[in-house]
Image 1 (tube, one colour):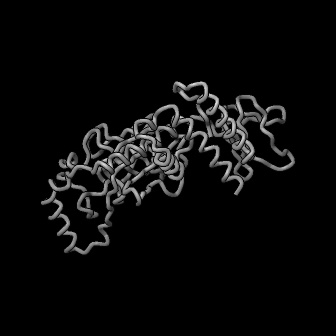
Image 2 (cartoon, rainbow, N blue to C red):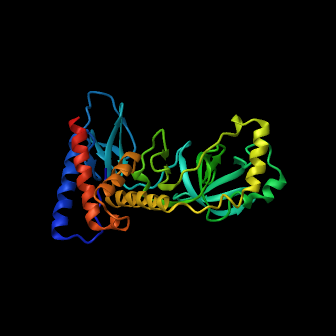
Image 3 (cartoon, rainbow, N blue to C red):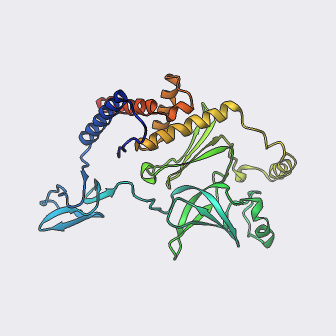
Length: 324
């Protein structure tokens, strides 16, 4: 965990409370696990009697293992490496990413991914609107702007890496594609941990939450996902015809309550990002519930007092969790 210096005006009382909360978090973090924060040239304690593997950010000098970067020491079996803090997004095949379309090119879309190079989503790697698996034709290429245009927010999966270092994406499932009726948030990628689940449906609030591995997070109104493979041919034709007839009906404004919920969740994520806390569904919902229990208005969530309250609450949550 990386705690940041809060860039907000604090009163003397708030400053004392905030520093006390951060000290408690740091003490809990240091005693809860064997990881150690290191800077360059710091010695990393290892057992030389047992074989170990030197990983990223380490170097052996005069029989001593030293850190070559600032970060946190991680140990996986015999591998010892240093996980750098505030590192850029390092993509891996299979990552769930959220991005924004910046260009519609020949048979492809270019997508901004909070990476040093843009991602490429090929037309052939895209799930077509009709849900039918078939070869892409020149007609499909001409109709690419009916699928995505510039500034559209999309969700996809990292397929592989191209020779120039850019990412090739795929969106062959119904859960991928265009994202609407919500807001896109950006946090530092190191605050997002890879997990089995990056798609979350908050049923009690009717909200979809997609935490992209690249640091882009989508909060939006829930959209039902239907698998075309489970639909009979007749029902499939009815769906296509009805969707064409009801295009205007789909452009219904999102309910005010839903929009307020989206903003509240978005502000909770902004607060966690400002504090440098890991962004997970559990912590996000706890922050949202905390704002509701304290009767904090949506716009007041970005104020100094709520940041201090969240830091204190996180320290108490970790202390309680550790006792269990």
